[in-house]
Length: 213
Image 1: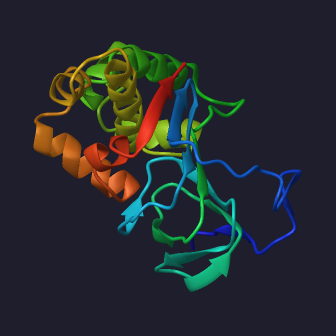
Image 2: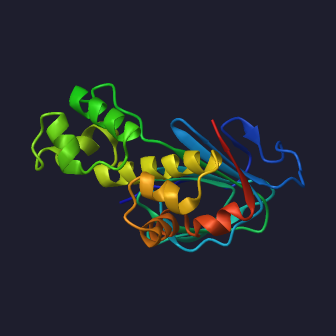
Image 3: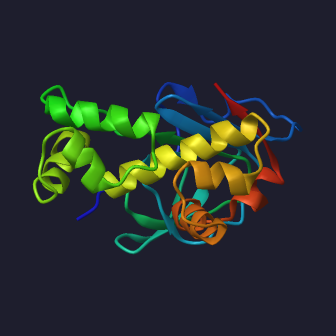
């Protein structure tokens, strides 16, 4: 059973409920190595399933969290595990923090190499990466989640999204950026983005500025 850690009020991670200041600024998306974040007005999100863990926090007020496992709850904050179908319904500003899976201390060195290969070229197939690190195509998908906590396909999708964000921040158009990141077509990218975040990339970028570091 998927476990979702929630908080209904008080302090989360040392931040009091009303500690974040009011702002009229445009929503902002930050993308950096290992994580990404959104801070801004509530978004109209469909049900979706992320590739990485997501911490959601209602800046101004609690929000409604819907999941298949726990039903509907009114919470102030929640840590939503990767691959958990959920929907966030909010009235006030939201903070979403996406956390890239970290390698366990006992991670296989070949998987460490595999994640590095993916970060440098997210267009690679599982078979190609497996061959590069000396693993069979049957052994590789079994070993990868043991070291990362997520599947190869989900990890690659997350890395591809980061590459698209970086390219767009440098001035590339979405079509070219998604193709260079390994998406087969604009519709493949659009469908994948919607399934991961609950809205389209164009809808998100129309309301938020993108900052990549």
